Image (tube, rainbow, N blue to C red; front, side):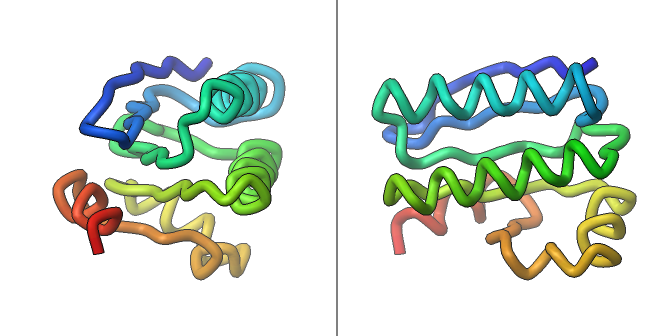
Amino acid sequence: MLNTTERQAGDVTILDLEGSLIMGGGATILRDTVGRLLAAGQKKVLLNFAGVKYVDSSGIGELVSSLVTFNREDGQLKLFSLTERIEEVLTLSSLLSLFEVYPDEEQALGSFES
């Protein structure tokens, strides 16, 4: 299961993710949350992966789909605090380069200013 906590830093929405981004539970929660944020006009979103324990292929697919959706809507979706395991999965699947990834929240937030 995936839990999300939403908070604001100026015009940036930060989603703290905790749990597993997997088929059924986590992937669906991410899709619904991203859709709701875009519908509400939130175009700058950071996903905090510090609490994500596991991602399966469905979760990776949903992550890529979310990125494509944001790009299509002229939004920005960025990731930070990837665990070693999540970074490895994205690297092995040759998808890491699709995302803007930052080591911590401060640098991720700063990337919207430049």
